[in-house]
Image (tube, rainbow, N blue to C red; front, side):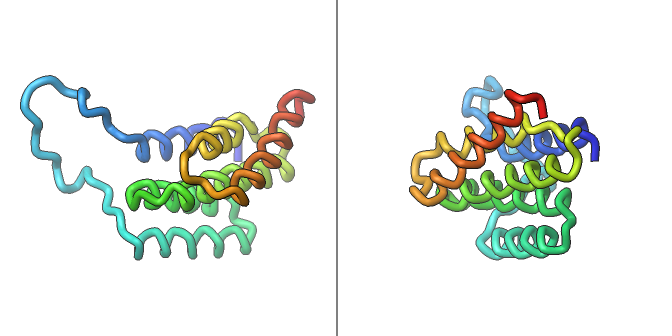
Length: 146
């Protein structure tokens, strides 16, 4: 997968997961189209987790990345910062694994995901340690150009 495709995938997922500011539109609030609202539930979080782990185990890292991003989106909607942080870490790790297979895969999206995860209040110490180690690896690769 090209680094542009990975970056586009990460940016689309981040845009879908980003909260909409309250001041986004002037005037009275408008009813949202039901089709545009992405559902959030513990069942959907568990399904995303299971699919991410399955695809990771099978070596389908692109699909695993997509499901880890969905895992993080679901966790955000469920107000579970610990799970959001792990989802972001795991998504970043899929990018790291892709980079190890193909050095042309850009690690910048992984850096951003890890920094976002580290900035979360409520992330566990274990998760912070893992994210910090992954971030150090990513930064060292970015510094060395590979």
